[in-house]
Amino acid sequence: MLTLYPDIKPYAEHRLAVDAPHELYIEESGNPKGIPVIVVHGGPGGGCEDYYRRFFDAERFRIILLDQRGAGRSTPLAELEANTTADLVTDLEKARQFLGIEKWLMFGGSWGSTLSLVYAEAYPQRVHGLILRGIFLCRPEDIHWFYQHGASRVFPDHWRDFVATIPESERGDMVGAYYRRLTSENELEQIQAAKAWSIWEGRCATLHPNPRVVEHFGHPHVAIALARIECHYFMNQAFLEPGQILRDAGRLAEIPGVIVHGRYDMVCPLDNALALSDVWPDAELRIIRDAGHSASEPAIIDTLMHACDEMADRIEGF
Image 1 (cartoon, one colour):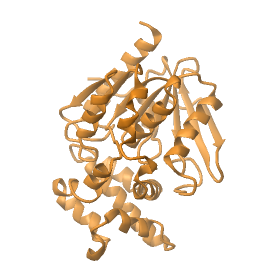
Image 2 (cartoon, rainbow, N blue to C red; image 1 turned 45 degrees about the horizontal axis):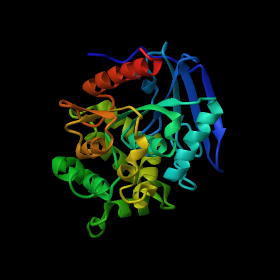
Image 3 (tube, rainbow, N blue to C red; image 1 turned 45 degrees about the vertical axis):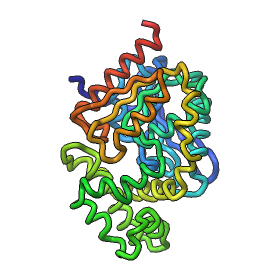
Image 4 (cartoon, rainbow, N blue to C red; image 1 turned 135 degrees about the vertical axis):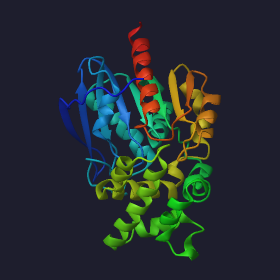
């Protein structure tokens, strides 16, 4: 089983000003002349983690990490103004042009799979291929599953903690109830709601309990951006038209893809991946029998790294 490559440091870091007030953090590592690969992080609002660089052979890939609007090291943190899916797609295209890249490989998980798909459907000529994990189609039923009824029955103990901060009279619309608190003028109320929202996700993300993942999700810097931006997007149906990703999947024709999905993914259930696979014949679906949602799970890591090597061989014509 493959494990992550040794840690590496960026050879370049950039700040890219986009629509005011947003400024994006972008970094490059690996081989400047290698295959460009853009890591599209989850959330929305999750930001990139340093270990994301370690999925790729540093001799073969030019590894690009980009923190989306309001996330990670982009500024201002947790900003909701001018923060929509269309804005993030435009930002990816601006970043591609800024870095002087003609075509790149996209590597995204969870919300990162959503945004990668929307970008590839808008700019198919700019995409070598897609390696996607934990498919999230952002349909109303997908949001309802995790934030209203579904995952609550699998993790009823953790769900109790998630709903504890919300009065019973408001629990019929958990996303709406959290949104009111996450956009409150009361900063203490904001951070308390953010940590509860984010820890709920962290607890459900892995097949086996992983305190490191939960600790990361509960960090105030991560939690406030993740919770505010996710809730903002989910209040607005992710700024997508109904069924948009599957409807426009024909634009992915001839773009190779690998879809990696844990069978026991409780954040984004497997039916998301099956629905995508049905309308994207150029993608191979790999169901991981002993994994949940997180990219940090051993079997997910192994499958993603094999997919990176295979895609590199294909791009290089081996």
